[in-house]
Length: 384
Image (cartoon, rainbow, N blue to C red; front, side, top):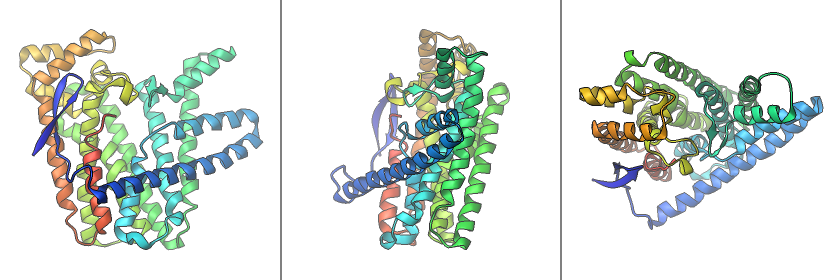
């Protein structure tokens, strides 16, 4: 069963929510989720404050550079990855285990995310993120305002790369603070390393696709979604959480988390594809239509090309960086008219159903199962 929503001017079909909004169990879990996000943010703030002091001792300018990195981490965000990791941990540990020992590991995932976002913004030449100037744009503006020598844009990109690198180092350092037995922490680290490798692999495939879109395909776009997004947004954070709880090899649970994680992660990226064309910039924090301007070979655009008639294909071939807002709006209508939006919505719904079926594993804690079911819907019914 499905209900209608709207993205831009295009109707969407989205999976119906399981359970009512007034369900007391869901309300309790929602409140607890807010506490988890707050705990992660507090952990990050305390850690980053001490790190900035350390870097300021090297040189005040280095301290200012570290502040730029801190602001990139703490400037909003839904803390999706720590949340999935928490429920991956809770799904094994149950409600009786204390949270503080694993909080540094959960928060480390947000530093890893900041690294990926900052570098991604440089690669995509993105001007805004979460409604604010991206790191490289903000640093370039500071460079110009200070009247320094050299090209501000080049300086901003160079510094942003270093800011991302610093976030990656900080993630390692914070992860090491998790109060776990050494052997367990080693298994957590192995999981974390695989997550990073797959993230970089997915990012490379994304860059490769942009350089050769005519030879890309829907299957290849889904492969990018699997590695760039599903892997480090849902699948590996869940497995990371299981490792935090001491699970190394428990085939049914690992299989359930993997199946759920891939399904929700792909649905998450497919939702991003829709938001990249039809999202409200005031909510997404990024300009609408960027994917159309660049011709980014997302699953949505690859499907549109596959389904397009000759006239629609000619229109889609006119996608370009210099496209005006009016042209982007027209192209968005063409994409919808091909039927690609409706098909992507069906793909999202199918993946949510697949994820919910994966949660039938009886070894998953009941509260975690309920929370993960809610997250599957929330991750694919979001405005940003």
